Image (cartoon, rainbow, N blue to C red; front, side):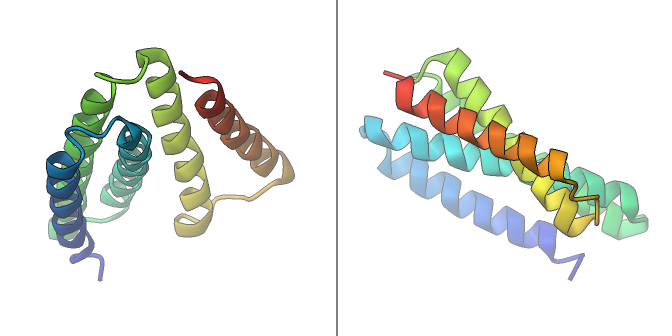
Length: 137
């Protein structure tokens, strides 16, 4: 399973990127959706990097490949949405999604501690992301 995940990420990423790039060219309302997808890819590149550090040999190389692919997809989508959304808001939302998702996946995948304060501040971060969306023009 570990060896197939980067391949699955590649296929999923290419499909999402192609479909969204083709069908969202003229739809301003899709920029927030694309920003969420970019944030999810940021989260995935952090997880792939963590898994690459935990494994050895070909598995490590495959995870590192998944990291690079997710990085490219995430940055490409971020570049696309910043043409329509304010850079400060887009960047804050992108990093917030990546940070919150990475912490939550770290708890699930890497068995990191799920303390009250970690979950409290992740909830606060998610609330801030929603707030930025609500006050953006």
